[in-house]
Image (cartoon, rainbow, N blue to C red; front, side, top):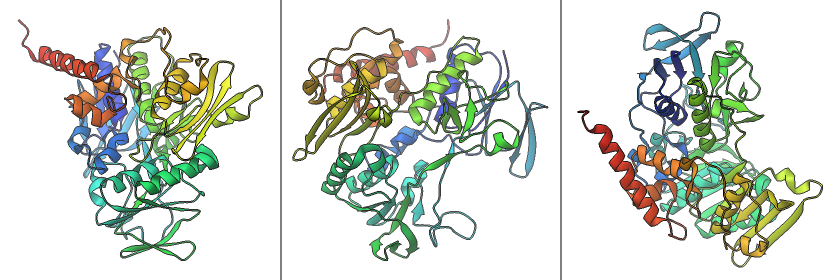
Length: 468
């Protein structure tokens, strides 16, 4: 078996280590981590921020079967010699490899705002991004401004309001997520955020930060003890580019997650597969699963991740399914629902009897069902209004790994996601509910989740029993 060297230690790396062990990889695995502890499951950070999840749940279990060098900053990749150079304190070390995996993640984009950068190039107190559990502790005071109208900005503003912080969301578009939801649906999102206690300022940006406030581009001010920057991320591609590995927006990989250098692979937020980079947490875990199979000799091709966005927000359920360009394709039929009084909206693009795209707000059961049908490529039922109103069809048969079986249909939580959350420390049904939202829809899956908890606990105990 090959000796594998991994640069970066986020959730994708942790998943890769688990799956390599599962597939019986017998070579060595070494991880170079610039951090002193694994990076958390980032999608759950806003749940921690809202005070609904203990941050300790985000800490993954120790890496199985790997040598992890913390505080080791990779400085250069030498593909010809198959060596990575790293700095650990004042010491420079060289790490040979048979196979190199780049899991370097992405870095936050910091906008050019006056006084938001300290003299040492770091963010000063009162200004933070949201990439680590410690960033939640940097958001202090009774008033916060969140800059950014994308998914993370909406989730962060909603979480802060839920914990009682007076929160203002500033976004460049007329409404948050305007480019994804369209004017009508994004307008409803703004209304729901305001009803949840978030002040939404559309068509604005922050140009200067001063003690206790920020100044906007129109000269107005907003009170702010903390400024949270949710202004996007960029793939970390510096090491790959310097090594002559092909980079577009991210590190370009093929269906085996292999880069232009056949001995180097990339996974997670740094990778660009099928023209998409920074594909998110779920895609990163799926890439890790595929790569573990590839590195242990299994003929596997990584499928493009389904384009599905579902916000983790306490204000309202929101989802975008499929490419929005599908609404303009020839032959597409559109089905819609608009209920301004109830704060509900749905728009479906149907290609025959399959879902090509969808935008939904305030319809949690429909979001779960439509997401399931889209992922599986299943036909929609003939009762289209019933579909939008949450009357779920029985899913047809599909050949799927039992680990991918959906346990919570309302929130489309699979057995694999529940098992991953259990491994990260959510060991009871209520903790799994907080971590994954399973059981928080219709409640019909409570018994299955409790049984899964018991099964996972029994399996863990058996692993600890001494071999006779």
